Image (cartoon, rainbow, N blue to C red; front, side, top):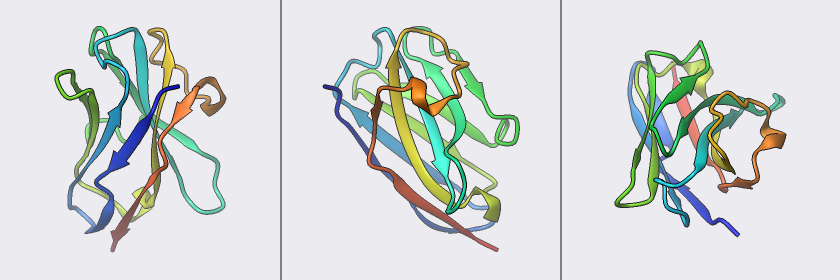
Length: 125
Protein backbone atom coordinates (compact mmCIF):
# COMPACT_ATOMS: atom_id res chain seq x y z
CA UNK A 1 0.00 0.00 0.00
CA UNK A 2 1.43 3.37 -1.02
CA UNK A 3 0.79 6.28 1.31
CA UNK A 4 0.63 9.79 -0.11
CA UNK A 5 0.22 12.99 1.88
CA UNK A 6 -0.23 16.36 0.23
CA UNK A 7 0.32 19.81 1.62
CA UNK A 8 0.75 23.38 0.51
CA UNK A 9 -2.64 24.48 -0.75
CA UNK A 10 -4.24 27.78 0.17
CA UNK A 11 -5.60 31.08 -1.02
CA UNK A 12 -3.56 33.24 -3.36
CA UNK A 13 -4.20 36.27 -5.55
CA UNK A 14 -4.10 35.97 -9.32
CA UNK A 15 -0.52 36.13 -10.53
CA UNK A 16 0.78 34.60 -7.34
CA UNK A 17 2.55 31.32 -6.68
CA UNK A 18 2.09 28.22 -4.58
CA UNK A 19 4.09 25.05 -4.14
CA UNK A 20 2.31 21.81 -3.39
CA UNK A 21 4.13 18.88 -1.86
CA UNK A 22 3.31 15.18 -1.96
CA UNK A 23 5.21 12.97 0.46
CA UNK A 24 5.13 9.35 -0.63
CA UNK A 25 5.98 6.08 1.07
CA UNK A 26 7.93 4.72 -1.91
CA UNK A 27 11.28 5.81 -3.17
CA UNK A 28 10.74 8.57 -5.71
CA UNK A 29 13.80 7.28 -7.55
CA UNK A 30 12.09 3.97 -8.27
CA UNK A 31 10.00 2.83 -11.24
CA UNK A 32 6.94 4.95 -10.67
CA UNK A 33 5.14 7.81 -12.33
CA UNK A 34 3.96 10.57 -10.04
CA UNK A 35 1.15 12.71 -11.42
CA UNK A 36 -0.87 15.71 -10.38
CA UNK A 37 -4.58 16.12 -11.07
CA UNK A 38 -7.08 18.77 -10.16
CA UNK A 39 -10.83 18.84 -9.82
CA UNK A 40 -13.05 21.88 -9.71
CA UNK A 41 -16.62 21.64 -8.39
CA UNK A 42 -18.91 20.03 -10.94
CA UNK A 43 -15.98 19.15 -13.20
CA UNK A 44 -14.17 15.93 -13.99
CA UNK A 45 -10.76 15.28 -12.54
CA UNK A 46 -8.18 16.80 -14.88
CA UNK A 47 -4.63 15.61 -15.51
CA UNK A 48 -2.10 18.42 -14.97
CA UNK A 49 1.16 16.61 -15.51
CA UNK A 50 3.42 13.77 -14.50
CA UNK A 51 7.05 12.95 -13.80
CA UNK A 52 8.93 9.74 -14.45
CA UNK A 53 10.60 9.10 -11.12
CA UNK A 54 13.57 7.31 -12.68
CA UNK A 55 14.48 9.78 -15.39
CA UNK A 56 12.85 12.99 -14.14
CA UNK A 57 11.22 13.53 -17.53
CA UNK A 58 7.96 15.44 -17.29
CA UNK A 59 4.77 15.95 -19.25
CA UNK A 60 2.25 18.76 -18.80
CA UNK A 61 -1.24 19.79 -19.73
CA UNK A 62 -0.95 22.47 -22.39
CA UNK A 63 -2.75 25.12 -20.36
CA UNK A 64 -0.25 24.89 -17.48
CA UNK A 65 2.95 24.31 -19.43
CA UNK A 66 5.39 27.10 -18.68
CA UNK A 67 3.55 28.06 -15.48
CA UNK A 68 3.62 24.79 -13.52
CA UNK A 69 6.65 22.63 -12.80
CA UNK A 70 6.75 19.11 -11.37
CA UNK A 71 9.91 18.02 -9.61
CA UNK A 72 11.04 15.42 -7.10
CA UNK A 73 13.41 15.26 -4.17
CA UNK A 74 14.57 11.68 -3.91
CA UNK A 75 16.22 12.23 -0.54
CA UNK A 76 12.85 13.23 0.91
CA UNK A 77 10.65 10.94 -1.23
CA UNK A 78 8.63 14.01 -2.08
CA UNK A 79 7.19 15.30 -5.32
CA UNK A 80 6.40 18.97 -5.83
CA UNK A 81 4.08 21.01 -8.00
CA UNK A 82 5.35 24.57 -8.32
CA UNK A 83 2.57 26.80 -9.63
CA UNK A 84 3.38 30.29 -10.87
CA UNK A 85 1.28 32.98 -12.55
CA UNK A 86 -1.84 31.48 -11.05
CA UNK A 87 -5.20 32.30 -12.55
CA UNK A 88 -8.70 32.11 -11.08
CA UNK A 89 -9.42 29.19 -13.39
CA UNK A 90 -6.70 27.22 -11.58
CA UNK A 91 -8.96 27.09 -8.54
CA UNK A 92 -9.58 23.43 -7.69
CA UNK A 93 -8.75 20.61 -5.34
CA UNK A 94 -5.34 19.27 -6.31
CA UNK A 95 -4.38 15.61 -5.98
CA UNK A 96 -1.18 13.66 -6.40
CA UNK A 97 -1.38 10.14 -7.71
CA UNK A 98 0.97 7.34 -8.62
CA UNK A 99 1.20 4.22 -10.73
CA UNK A 100 4.03 1.83 -11.43
CA UNK A 101 5.90 2.03 -14.69
CA UNK A 102 7.34 4.91 -16.65
CA UNK A 103 4.68 6.26 -18.98
CA UNK A 104 4.15 9.94 -18.22
CA UNK A 105 1.44 10.37 -20.86
CA UNK A 106 -1.38 8.52 -19.10
CA UNK A 107 -3.93 11.22 -18.36
CA UNK A 108 -6.85 9.00 -17.38
CA UNK A 109 -7.28 9.09 -13.63
CA UNK A 110 -8.49 5.47 -13.63
CA UNK A 111 -5.01 4.35 -14.58
CA UNK A 112 -3.53 5.57 -11.29
CA UNK A 113 -3.50 3.25 -8.32
CA UNK A 114 -2.88 5.45 -5.30
CA UNK A 115 -4.02 8.93 -4.43
CA UNK A 116 -3.42 11.62 -1.91
CA UNK A 117 -6.25 13.17 0.06
CA UNK A 118 -6.26 16.39 -1.94
CA UNK A 119 -5.44 19.97 -1.09
CA UNK A 120 -7.50 23.02 -2.01
CA UNK A 121 -6.06 25.82 -4.12
CA UNK A 122 -8.12 28.99 -4.45
CA UNK A 123 -7.02 31.83 -6.71
CA UNK A 124 -8.82 35.13 -6.25
CA UNK A 125 -9.14 37.68 -9.03
